[in-house]
Length: 234
Image (cartoon, rainbow, N blue to C red; front, side):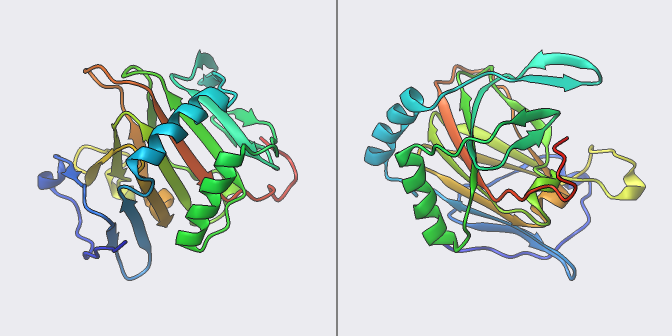
């Protein structure tokens, strides 16, 4: 796959409308100090293989619905998840317990991605979006257990959903996202998306709810997890 580079520009009003990305490979942009990079590889798994893999993962993965706590209010996640890895993973005050029993198909996919990227992943968060109402809100994968400049390899099966990204505002914008740069990336059946560098530090991402009917979609997010320094999982 290949990557496109472009120099950083401060966002203005012209960035209200998100850019659509469909090409194989794109580097978001780089500056003198940091690199923010994503790679897009449509057809990483060909459609015939992706079909049977999707059905097997849908059937074999132990899917469950977790409960979030936000501002002391609990609510169920609008999607199903499953965790694989020898370490726990905590996000949004939810702790996924260690699960070293990798499904053989997941191990095979992990090894294929490792061969392509040169990274060695030790954990996997699986997401099942059951229909157009399932989603994940704006966030960054920046938990301490992911380390600095984490690499996330995201593999999609099933219905196409739109992956949206938005640049975090500069400090002087005081949390105002109105005019930040935005990206929209349709993730098709068998597509691999890799985020690396300072992407999590400088960008947020989400999969929004949709107005039109959508079938099931599985998203596998391979990660590198480290033990938290103080040994306490918060």
